[in-house]
Length: 187
Image (cartoon, rainbow, N blue to C red):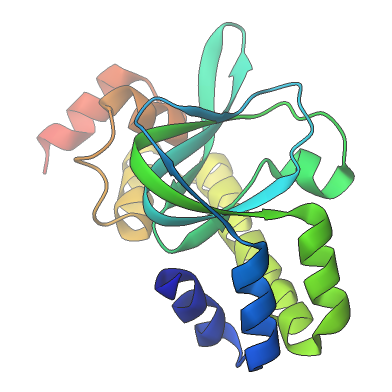
């Protein structure tokens, strides 16, 4: 649980009572590469935290998988459209390498927010940061050419390009595999 507590306390101090409740409510899971953690069409009841490993959040468009988010160690992730709306999701979450994942039920997070102002503050600040990351991703796709997108990707994820399939990187960047190969040849 140390990766989670380090992440949370980097945002804001937590009282010991909140830590105890987090510890009691956290589900620690180990998933193998290729495991589908969550499927399109379901309601997502969990906020996840990637303790170690890698996952992708994607949707299907015209028989193509489009990667919208990459979940890396030390960061939260979920099927955001469903988790907050409590409606079926258009996203699927796939584990890309053996991973340790912490899971929190929606209702348990709400209980933590209600009981501990410090945790509510952490939730707000994390949500703000995730929103800014999402905005960076939208800006990347809308305003950057393929070369700039790849450079932004390398800055955002400096240690995962060799852990992902090239098709996954191309999908995340919104470019063809051929374009990605030409760009990578320059490095």
